[in-house]
Each structure stands twice: as C-alpha cells, then as structure tokens.
Length: 370
Image 1 (tube, helix red, strand yellow):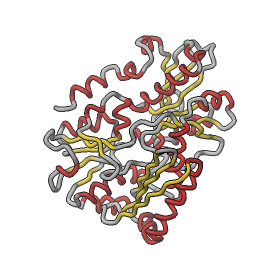
Image 2: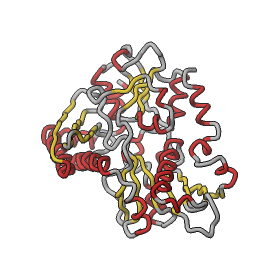
Image 3: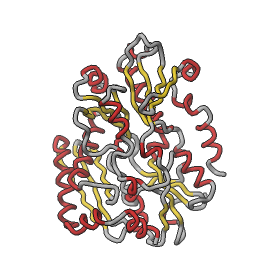
C-alpha cells in the first residue's frame, strides 16, 4: 500500500487542509443553493464578500485558497473576516466518472456550471485549471489573470518501485489515464501498452494504483506539488517523452467583463510571463479546433527574452504524429501559436481532422485497447 499513508493524511479533514485557519470549519456558514453550490462563508453577512467560485476537489480547493492568499497579500483589507467567500460547485465532469471525457463531450465539462454561476451573479470570480478551459469564453466574461505557473511536466507514477520510467514498463502494461494526449504518446513509445479510462481526483487515482487496478499512471506534477504530494511521483517526464497539455500547470481567474471591482482585484494578480505563454498555447489550440477526440499537446516558455513553442497532434493510437517548433518575439506570442497551429493543420491535412471528428468514442477507445 505504497500511497495509502499519503492519501489518508490528505483526506482527513480535507476542508481544513486547504482552509486558511482551523476556525474555518467551526465558523463557516454552510448551505446548498438551487445550483448545487456549497457556499462556505467566512464571516458575517453584513460584509459584501468577494465570492470565489471553484470546483470541490482537493486540488481545486487548493487553487482557490492559493488565489485567496494572493488576494489578501495584494489587498490587506480582504483579510477582514467575511471579505472573501469560497463557493464550491459540482460540475458535470466531477459527477460522471464512469465515462471518458471524450464520451461526455469534451471541453467545458469542468467549467459550465461555474460559467452559469458567474453570469447569474452567484459568484464574482471563478478559479480554473487553465487546461480545462475552452478556447472560447461565454459572452460577458473575461479571463484576464493567470497566476504564476507551476512546473508544467507530467509525473510518471509506478505501482512497482523497481520501474522508474515509462520505458521500463513491460509489454502489455496497463496504464491508467483519461487523456488521449497521454495515451497517444505512450502508445508511440510502446504500442502494446493498454491504456484504460482512469478518472476521479488525485487521491482516487492513487488508491486505484495502490489496489493494483493499473500498473502505472500519469498526473500533472503541478497538481501534486500544489497539494504537497509530489513525493508520490516516481519520475518527472521531460517534453521529449511526454509533451504536456495546453496550459498545463496554470491557474486562471475569470470574472464578468463589466465587474470593475473584481477586475481591479484579479488584474493585480496576473503573472505576465505565464499569461503570455498560455495565450500562445491557447492560440495554437484554437487554430486546430481541438476536441477531446484529438490528441493535442503544446507548450511555450520564455528563454533569454524570446518565446519558444513546441506543439504536436497525433492519432489516438500513436501511429501517426505531427510536431512543430517555433520561436519569436514575446509580443508576437499569440501569432506564433496561431502559425504553429496552421503549420500542423496543413501538414496533417483535412483528412486527418475529418477522421478525428467522424470517429465515435467507441472507435477511438477500441484503438487504444486493442
């Protein structure tokens, strides 16, 4: 039971694990509204709080409380009791775990309910893992803030301590992942791997690994670090082995476009370098019109005053892969992403993308489990 101790430590009193003080759970006003949001108020109702919308997973809560901490550091008046409220919501992606994201319809599964609450003025800002955010935003909302980025790479986690990297896994090893991006790159390394749908929060996935349901899994090292669980990682995969997802490791904050108060707060938190890289990556994704049937990866980084970008698209079974690299001036980040997307779109050809759209989830899964 390699991960049991770590999982138990995090799960005991999970709310207090991310709350700003032990008094939080004792003093919180807890209620459920008609949108299934759990509102965890931190003070008295006379104060008009800044309401932060978030999903309820341990990782999402860690990111919401990181946002809260940064807001208080920048605006000390928000430390007043009741000045900030965390509003937890269940999304469709959280509630349906027995199907792959591809079968459920892909992007937006972790954001729609938050969008609705934001537009309905139930919350003032929403905190997102940027890799879950579609390239389009609902009218009336903006996403002007990205917090400083964590390590963007994927972590390889093995159930066998003697296996320290993907290449060490034996033929026919079973790897748990719900990501076609990861699956396609894994199968390109070894076509005999069996990739199986593996969803749920980090703790659930590690528990399944501990129980021998799979031989290994991959998770974003950023999420593990944010929860103090990076010790679970067997190794961290470099880009040459596993190119990360668009916007992986980045936290974005969304608000209504006409909400000057919220804009003032979150504009002050924006990390320009991170947002520049994420904007480049999302421009690449937008050109490719990515959906959850198409394995797409892309990463940008700033080195010596230049932005460097690497992207790829692949067949779900890893048999075909197209990749590109480019660089340019930082102020041209979005254009660099768009041009990289156009290069791969032309190289792969219309037939590639038509096939991705036409394939049913069952056909894709059939390729991956053959």
